[in-house]
Image (cartoon, rainbow, N blue to C red; front, side, top):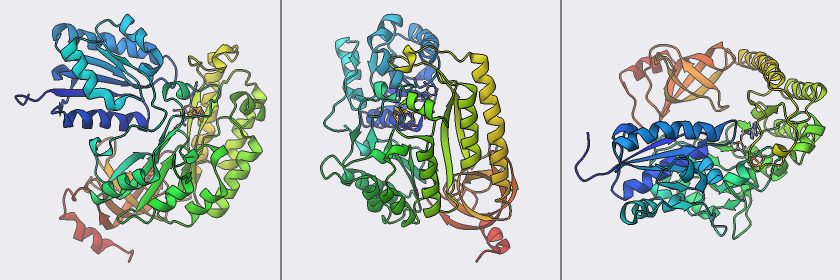
Length: 467
Ligand code: SAM
Ligand code: F3S
């Protein structure tokens, strides 16, 4: 159903939280320009494909998808089709050549240009390709972000990455590090909290490498500036690089209880030989020492990580070291990937000498081990009491589901009766490898949105055995 006079936009998002947030920036920027969001591509005046290129066959996937969107374009030639995100950045002009029905290509550093790019397409018949990065500052209009949920929000603190890990395409697709000013980030967070949010997640490719471009304030300073803001109950950040994890940051986390007891700290490989070839800038023992120091200052913190198997030159002994690191650290969650060569990266020029079947077998062994560890860790939580911030319903729509402070998924027994943003005190009754189940003791707070069915609340509070 279209509203007369209002153009519509549909954004399809692939990839990470940064892409998710960028998509809300696209929608917000166009809303300011008089657009409305369309529920599906079939009826949209503008379709944006916000792409991810971090792993395997990303480019091919984009062209396959474009083929299908191209059919819509043929039936409705006035529709404008744009490719954005990391594949746009990586492929540039080539996209216009291979998919002649694409109207424009917008790189990751050029998001703010979207309204003017659309005007150039419509009014001048241009096919713009905008790929550069403005190195002076991050062009950002926080007020234009069209946020979908009110109880929690992601906030970019820096973009790009200067690390150049030999496997990773991000420095090419997201450019070099650019930081926002500390006071701008604080003001954005303050505004979001005033709108009812209680949880903030700070985003950056190497978020803990943050430096205020003017004052030189570091990430610990930023945490300390955000932690006391009124209304904030949970502060998270992602992704940290082990090399940039300063003692000051550990101290800032430990002394601000609003910082959640969970931390994503990719290690990628447990073998020094592989770490050196990956150019990760730390050794196995440095990583383990950091994990120990973090746990000493923040006992009970849930660590999560990323790991790659089948990196060029990874032998069986290297892989065993990865498994032993998993046993030693006992992560609460692991995102594991088989290596895939990415364009522009150093490792892509090396012999890809671990056959796919061997990588797949290693990944399966790693997953099996990690599932056991997670199940053990989760079982140890049975009987404990956690405050769960409800995000919605579980996959089957049967129970309310949310996250604990340690970022575990907790599904709440009984019908799905708590609205998004409700903070429910839950006693853990059952543990699975990837989630917990528990019974609601009482509602300890609401935020953002109202309870879906407030009638249930008194009943739960009566049951409550937690003061
Ligand atoms: N700093 C980034 C972040 O914010 O998560 C990490 C980059 S990437 C988006 C996330 C993970 O993908 C990496 O930590 C790594 O484990 C994995 N990854 C990156 N390049 C890869 C490749 N070429 N093959 C397989 N996995 C890869
Ligand atoms: Fe990629 Fe390494 Fe940066 S994994 S995002 S180059 S820290």
